[in-house]
Every structure is written in C-alpha cells, then in structure tokens.
Image (cartoon, rainbow, N blue to C red):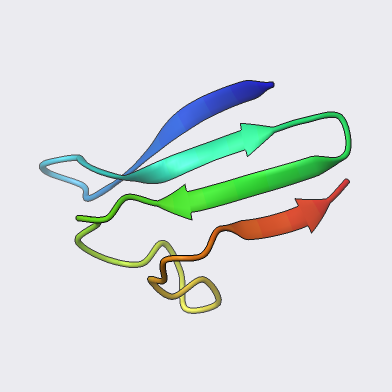
Length: 53
C-alpha cells in the first residue's frame, strides 16, 4: 500500500490528511486537526473517503 501526506495552504502548508492506494481502492482520511477541506465535494468529516479504481 502506497501513501502520501496531503497539505493545504499556499504560504504556510498545513497537514490536512493522508491519501493511500491499494490494488483496488483509493482512500483519503482527514487529520483530526485539519484546518480546512480540500474541496467543496470533500467536506471535513471523520469517516474516510474511498473510491474504487
């Protein structure tokens, strides 16, 4: 499983969450202290976002 940390902010990057990929799925999970949502279609929430490849 590969994973990368995702940051928000232009002048001062702040950790927002982690994106990971397995053979069949992509998963994104926000950090508990994420300052803002990545997009309007992915609002802040406790559950992970998942998408099949």
